Length: 155
Image (cartoon, rainbow, N blue to C red; front, side, top):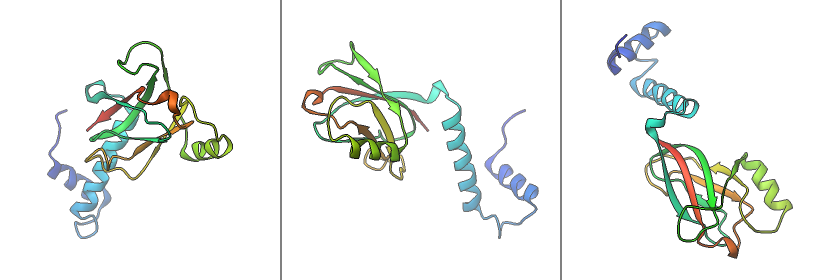
């Protein structure tokens, strides 16, 4: 089966739901299609769209901006090195935002991050609008300028 055009897809959706374009406008169908694409990107790990980026941790900063264009963050890795992303490292465990908020309020200590959570209504257009990765515990002085690698899926 070959693919169909966007125009044909809109027609098929309207025919299936038995409603006209006054009810299912083009903008509503576009949102339905985009949400379906995002769900597929989240649930199906397509290697063709997977990439990674590196950055540095900053003392007492509990977040890292998500790279521009990132749709789904697949993992976050922290290295003990300050010069290269090789050697001793750990993959952080993904947790819910509320878990991190409770963890940070119960543990006032800082240190090497163990957990991460996603935060923000990301648009994916730029690194400042792609949401943030919250870290816990908050990186301390020993973690300053240590490498962090973010593995993510782009659109």
